Length: 215
Picture (spheres, rainbow, N blue to C red):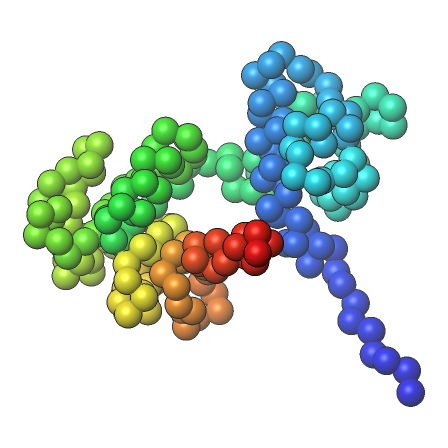
């Protein structure tokens, strides 16, 4: 009996390559700042690191179209713009954070100073010591006021850094206020409509992978 084969579409390959495409975009931007106008796949692989080979770079980029010439490399400016469009980095994004403890504060600070396309527009917490104060001009509001404040902020992306027990409720409320993509740092799975893009980052799980290798 023949085993059924699952056909992968170019769209599947592109989705799986998205984390690498972001690395390529960052490497190309760095090359541009260094004054480079043309970069080979070998040169880009050297900038990206992380075990990404020149062959993998050529394969990933070929899924987006035909770029560069064999032996001459890629036009850095053109490819930076192309990848920015693919990754949605050709526009600014407004972000809301729920939970402004150590992790929420650290993420906001990182985005503010490192990623110019992402802007913190709303912050919610329940800590009386935080509510009513400001962070870089953004007022920290009480979570109870989310339905009143969040819909008018125009945030497409939400970051969840609340305790696991509160994460599902908070995420559902964010989605109800118009957020369509979530980055979840709570160590729990979220049950949301399929139309909502969710990425869960479990820091303890990632650390356990490292401790496994060490032991």
